[in-house]
Image (cartoon, rainbow, N blue to C red):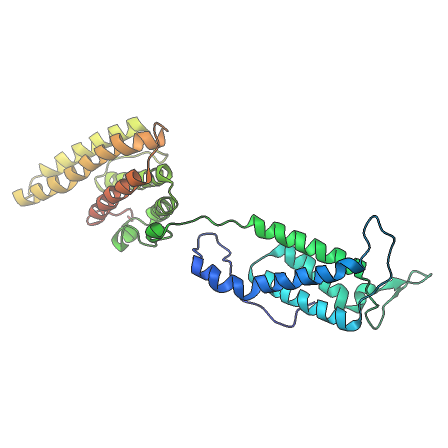
Length: 314
């Protein structure tokens, strides 16, 4: 059964990688959820004295048509709120309870021949059944709300989170395969995971090393590079740079620019290898967020310089 209110706008994102500010919570929550929760509690308080409990004999009190209509309105509003917040378990049980109150087909019975008989109207609903359904709704709603957790991103770190161009558009364009690791490094920094941020930064550096090696026609393995492989590849790159600078037909200015560009990158690679990569990859130490921010600044500068002349795109 479709509810008459249509399709309420969803507030919670389907992806967790979206920030919801404290202001969003202040703006949204007091306007709908506390009110419908208050009404649910009021309905429970009203029904409790009229319902039967395990240690009491059954009671015959039934809700009037006006009371059933009011309760159906509460459940409709509760359904809309649950829909707005993507509370799927609560949506199901609220829908079941509401249809029991508004759909005569839910009260079908069988005659002696086994044929279904469908009433034209909703039969009187006893408060015992209503109370039990409301208790179940509140319990499931409470459990589902409790299961949704929020991690705090300090205001000073928000600029790191899900940044689409943390290293600039030139790096995105030259190294599209590094996009995810660069964004993940920023996300890790946003929530204070310094070691994880350094790990993603070193994966980014490795991608830059691969691109530089291809640019200089140095063979490089497809699998993840180990410590000794970095050493060998850096030496091979250094040899390729030397060959490039002694090539006949190049002016002294060109040779100087080649040495300055490539040798500068190689020095940075050496620093990354000894200071950051070996420790992060081999779990030799952990990094604070301050150290990770320093690593980010260094890797960003390196990748930006590399992007001026080198690209992973063949």
